[in-house]
Length: 202
Image (cartoon, rainbow, N blue to C red; front, side, top):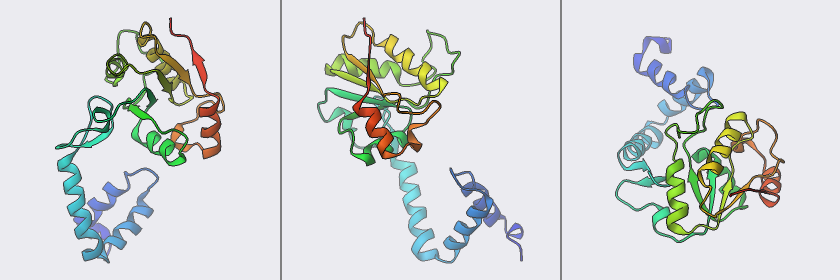
């Protein structure tokens, strides 16, 4: 009997194959593993996913994940340094290296290269400006990717922070052109952080 005869299995394979790095073949192997371990995998996975769907949201201040009933780390601790990244995956990569110990600001994406100066494109850029002013932040580290969109976003943020007197730095050019933070090795990230460049803020 083919899995195409079971709609539930077919639907599950389609959903799992949408995950990063997974195709139909990998999705089928995962589904088979789940089916063969109903009590150990499917039941707890279902319960956990339901709780995440119900209780985990994105903070509208820093962009990090938080419990719907709890306070985000950005509102519970003092900080004088913020590392700006495009997405949560980038933050997790930097955290795993131990290079940077400060706070983060997750934009939620990048600006298109043709973005106008009057639009933040739905990203948490104005929220970043507000955090810098409110918390008397001393340094903002721009850790966006080296792609055209990442550079556009970096320049837009620099312009938005003019007049705040905050020190603005950008990861060094050890990051390859077009390189995304999520896929860089620890050595490259360490070098990029250690040798980050100071940007003008006047």
